[in-house]
Image (cartoon, rainbow, N blue to C red; front, top):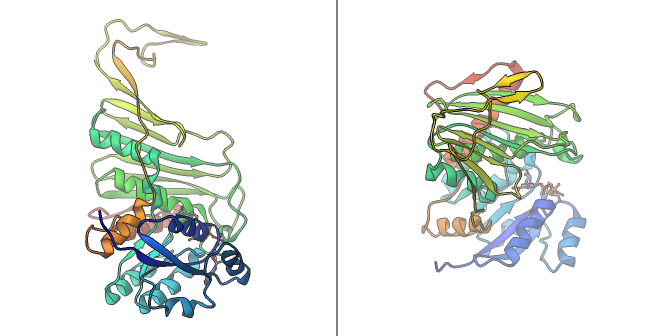
Length: 353
Ligand SMILES: NC(=O)c1ccc[n+]([C@@H]2O[C@H](COP(=O)([O-])OP(=O)(O)OC[C@H]3O[C@@H](n4cnc5c(N)ncnc54)[C@H](O)[C@@H]3O)[C@@H](O)[C@H]2O)c1
C-alpha cells in the first residue's frame, strides 16, 4: 500500500529506544529525525552513531517537522511525556505498559482525543510467532473449541537490577511481561473476563514481583493461566492449549507448535500401562489409531508491521492495531491482579470485562 513517510522522534535512548531507532533507520514508513535522552551520555552515544540528538525535550517537541513521537523511557515517566507530546500536537506511540493505573491511562487517552491525535501502546509481542501459531490453531478450529490455555515465560536470571526492580519506577514482572502476555490472551480468547486471581513471587526481589501466576476465567468457562518466572532453570512450555478435540503445545519460542488431534474418542482395547506400583488404562497414552499428530509451520511475521499499521491508521487507511479499549482492558486486568495478589482472593467483574 502507498503511504507517505512520517517523521519520527524517539524519547529515551536506552535499550528499547535503541531498538526503535534501529528499526526506524530501515523503515519504509518512518524517517528517524532524532532522539532525546535525559542522560547526556546517551545523547552522545546517539550522535556517535550518526543519529541527531536534540538538546532538550522542548526542542524536540517544538520541531514542527515531527509527526510522531515514540516514548521509550522508564514506566513512571510515561504519563508526563505522553501529555507533553499531545500538547505539542504529535501522534504518540508509548512503550508498554502505558502506565501503572487505569486513571493515568485514561488521562493519556483523553489528551489524545482532545488533541485529535493517535495514541497507541507498543504491544509488539502480537508479532511473536509462538503467539501467532496459537492464534492460527484457535482460528482454524482444527482441534475444536478451546477449554484452557496456558502461557508461560520462564527465565533464571531474576529481575533486571535496573529501574525494573523498583516500585517507584514501575518495576515488577506484571508490568514488564504481564502486560504482553495478558494482551496476547485477551486477543486469543474473544470473550469477556469473569474473574482474575493472581499470586506473585518475591524470590529474588522484595520490593516488586519477580514472577506471577494469573488465572483468568472467561464467561464461557474457558480458563487461562498466565505465568512469568525468573528463577526457573528448567522452563515449562511456552504455550499449552487444551481443546475439545485435541491438545497443542509450543515448547519454546524457537519451536513449532505440536498438535495431537483426536480421531476416535472410543477405543476398543486399551493396553494398560504398567507403572512401578500398578497398572492404568485411564492414563495410558493414545496411539496413531485414535489420534493424528502434526506440526504447525511457524507463521510469517514482521514486527515492523506495527509501525506500518500505525502510520496507515494516522492516514485513516487502517484501524489502529492496538486500540484504546484494548489498552484499558489490559490495564484493568493488571490492576485486578495487583489487588488479588494483595488480598489472596479472586477479583470478579460484574457483567464481565
Ligand atoms: N515492547 C518491548 O518489547 C519492550 C522491551 C524493553 C523495554 N520496553 C519498555 O521500554 C521502556 C524503556 O525500557 P528500556 O529497557 O529501554 O529502559 P532503559 O533503562 O534501557 O532506557 C531508558 C532510557 O530512558 C532515559 N530517560 C529516563 N527518563 C527520561 C526522561 N524523562 N526523558 C528522556 N529520557 C529519559 C534513560 O536515561 C534511559 O537511557 C519501558 O517502558 C519498558 O517497559 C519495551
